[in-house]
Length: 313
Length: 254
Image 1 (cartoon, each protein chain N blue to C red):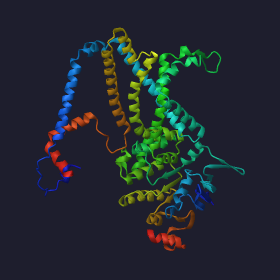
Image 2 (image 1 turned 60 degrees about the horizontal axis):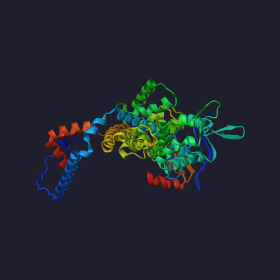
Image 3 (image 1 turned 90 degrees about the vertical axis):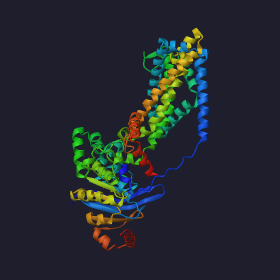
Image 4 (image 1 turned 90 degrees about the horizontal axis):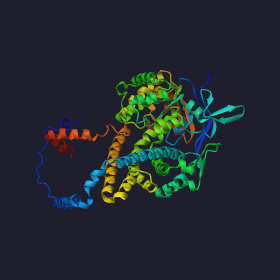
C-alpha cells in the first residue's frame, strides 16, 4: 500500500518534541572506542607480532596447498556427512524398529565420543584390522595402504558429521506438515517420490541454516586432523614454524585464512537460504545489494518515507 | 444394475479403543454427487479418508468401481495390497482437503503438473498445457505462475481442485473444502464444484454447506456417532428429517 492511499486529508499537525537524551549510550560508545583504539595500536606496533612475516607467508606455496587441502577435506567430509545424515534420518523415522534402533545406536556412538578420539582411532585402524577384505578372493588391501592419514581424517570427520546431520535432517522432515504427505499420497505418489519431491524440498528450509553452521564448524574442526599429519592449513603452518620458530605470525596466517573462508561460506549460506525460502513468504527477502539500492534510493526521498512511517504508528 | 462407483458394506474403523465408524453401508452410482453431513466427530471425514486408503478399515467391505480398497480378494482370502498398488489406485481418486495442502514450494502450475509428470510419466510440455487449461477452467488463468502463499484461500482451494482433476480421476473426494475459507470466498469454490458436478463427475463431499448439498447433491447422508442416521434425496432429508437427531442438527445449521 502506498503512503498516498493511507494519507487522510485532515491529517493532524506533526508533533515536534525535544527527543529524550541518552547519556549512557554516549559513555558506552566512548569506552568501546578507547578499548578498540588501544587494542589496534598495540597489535599494530608490537614488533613481536611480526606482521612482515605474516605478509611473507600469507600466499606462500605450502600455506596455499594447506588451504586447498582444508577445503577439500571440508567439502568431502560434508558430502559424506549430509548423505549419511539423510540416510540415518530416514532410518530413524522408519517403521521397522530394528532399522530405527540401528540409526539411534550409530548416533549414540559417534556423537558420544570426541571427534579427536575418532580421528586417532581411524588413524590406527590397521592395528585392529590389518587386512580389509570385501569377502571376495583377491579383493583385499592392506589397511595401512588404504587408510592413508587423509582417508583416516576424512572418515573420522565425515562419519562424525553424519551423526549430527541426521538430527538436523530429522528435525527438518518432522517440521513438514502431515497434510503435505497426505496430499502427495492422495495423488498416487510413492513414498520415495513424496520424500524427494514434496517433503525434502520443504524440509530444506529448516535444514539449510544449521547445515551452513555445520560446514563452517567443519572448516575449523578439520584442523584437528593435523595431529595425524594430514597437510591441511594448520599442519602446513606448523611445518613452517617448527623450522623457523615464527609461531605467532604463522598462526595469524592460518587465522586470516580461516576467517576469510568462513566469511565466504557465510555469504554462500545466505544465498542458499534465500533459494530454499521460495514460496514460504509472499516476497523473497532482499539481498544485501537490493537492500543497499533501496536504502540509497529512499534516503534521497527522505521526507516522503518519514511521513509514511509516522502514519503507521 | 451397473457397478457402483463406491460401495461400503458395514465399514468399521477404530483408533485404539475409540470406534469411529460403526458399520457404514452406502452406495454411490457413477455421476452421482453424495454429500455427507453431520456434527464433527461423527466419522464423516474418517470415512472419506478410508475411501482412498489414507486410513485402513478394520471391518466390513469397501470397494471403488468394483475393486476392494487396499486389499485384493483371491478365493476366500483377502491379501493386503503393496504400497505401489495402493498408490496406483489412489491416482484414480482425486482428493481435496480442508486445508488445501498445496505444495508451497511449487507454483500453481507446478502443483497441478506434479502428479501427471511424476506419477503418470506425462511429458512436461503436455502436462504444462493441461495445467494451464485446468487452471483456466477454475478461473485462475492469471495465477498460473503464482506461489500458493501469493493466493487467497479460495484461489488455493481452486488450485487444489485443478491439481486433483489433472489426474483425470473417476471419483472426487472433498473433505470440508470450504470450512477453512472466509465466508466471502466460499462461493467461488462451491461454484467450481457445482460445474464439476454438472460435467458428470462422481463426487463424495463432506460439507456443512446445506445450500450446496440441497442444490447440487443427488443424495444427502446424515451421519452421527459413526453410523448413518438418515439418507435420501437432499430435498426430502432437509425438508422432512425422519430422525430427531437429524432435525436437531439441521435446526442448528440452517
